[in-house]
Every structure is written in structure tokens, then in C-alpha cells.
Length: 180
Length: 149
Image (cartoon, rainbow over all chains, first blue to last red; front, side, top):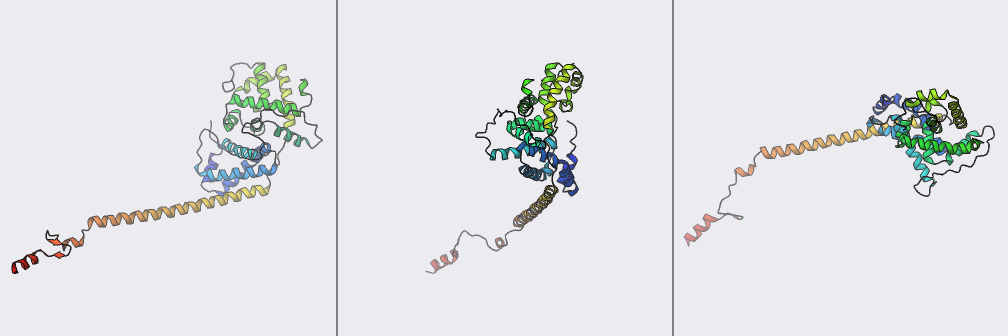
């Protein structure tokens, strides 16, 4: 693993540099907000998660030392944990076991301009761990090793979650895919 | 195995498995397998696999998240200022407690030193006698009374 591109910025934040705070927010807020919005499917809750993630960044910046994970991977893990707290609070699950089988019925065609809602609906229907894998690799463009690190699983397990998640999304979103 | 990429040219099975997992854009594929994947992507089979995976990618790309509002940006930045202030205040209090602790420790050490170095002043003026009682040194007087009788 090379040098962490955020390390110097984190050090400056730990030293109380206000310019570094602004740079960090500008650099990371869009990514954290997008991650939370896709995990939760709710813009308001995503904003709350983004705020809470930054509170943790400010709290831990002075003690941050690069270990095995980059700072960006660490904040992804923090944001994901906050998302899971909210998903649990919603009582989406009756037990701690994550649902593995999604309702893969094809979603109705979207009217123009409504495709985003349709994709959001499909993302919320797949198992949270599959959604997490897809959000990290596809939307956040983390490398397979970084995503597996953030999810604390092996790369093989990550690929399995990705493939199962994409298969479910394909069935829900791509018409005529079953004929392929 | 994913963490130990295949040596040499990529086969159709592995190429399809990677497309299943990572989609049709090769830049998202594992870095260690990209060179072999680029070569396979130029074959008819490779093109067909990528075209199939890209159909889902096109749909997924329609999901966009709005840019953060200036209000959210401002709230997070001001939260950082508050956090830094609280941390400084906490550091100040801990510094205060630390200084008070050092002062107290110094006072105790000083008192102990004075007690050890300075002898007890009362010891020069009072010698314990075998005849002494708690009511005073009554011994010789008592003997005298007996002789007088």
C-alpha cells in the first residue's frame, strides 16, 4: 500500500487547522453523502449519517495513524456502520441475519425522469451486504482490495456478493434479461 | 483465486466471472487482472460478455445523488470548529488539573522533607525518666516523705 493521500490533511486537522477542515469536507462530503444515500435510500437520513461521520473524523483526527487501511477506507467503514445502525433501527430485519434472497420481480418500466427512483427501489430490495459491495465497488469506485478491507471480508467473498447482487439487480431492472 | 490472479492469458470462464462481479467497465476490475482482461476483451466472446454486463451498468448509472447543499457543508464545518474548541477547553482543564497535581505533590514532598530534616524541638527539653509518671516525677519526693516519717 502506498502513501495515504489524506494523511497530511488529517494531520493538519488534528493540529486544528481550519483550512484543512474545509478541504476535508469539500473532498469527502460528496462521497460520504452518496454512499449513505445509496445504502439507505433516503436523502435526509444520508445527510444525518454524513454529519455523524464527520463528527467522528474531527474526534479521531488528532490520534489518526495509518495502519492497514487508508483514511478513505476507514471513513467508508465509519459511514457504513452508521448506515447499518439506521437500517437496524428501521427494523427491516426481524433477526440479525441479513436477508439473502431478494424479491427479484422485474420492476415496472420507469417513466422518463423516473429511472433514478426505480434503481433506488431495486438497490433497497437486495440484501444489505450485496448492496454495500455494489455501492463500494461500482459507485464509490473503491478497488476490490479496499472494498474487501472496508467490509472486513476476503476478496473472494466480495466477488461473490457483487455477482449475486448484480444478478438480482439485473433481474429487476433489465427487461428480457432472463432470455439471455 | 481473486487475490492470486491467474498467470498468462485469461480464459472465458474467469472473464465472465469478473464481468458478473465488476460489470462491463474494465477500470473497476482487479488491477492485477486488467492487462489480461484487456486482451480477452478484444475477442468476440469477450465483447459479448462485456456488452451483457454493460446493460446493467447503463441502468445503474441513472442513479445519481444530488451534490451536498451549502447548508449541510456549513453545518459540518461549524461542527468541526465546535469540536476543536471543546477539545482545546478539555486540554486546558486537564492542564489545570495537572498543574494542581504537581503543586500538591510538591507541597507534600516539601512537608515530608521538613519533617525528616528538622528535629522535634520538644526532645531537647524533656528526658524520659524511669521514675517519671504521668503525674510528674514524683519519685525522690516520695522517698523523702518516707524518711521523714
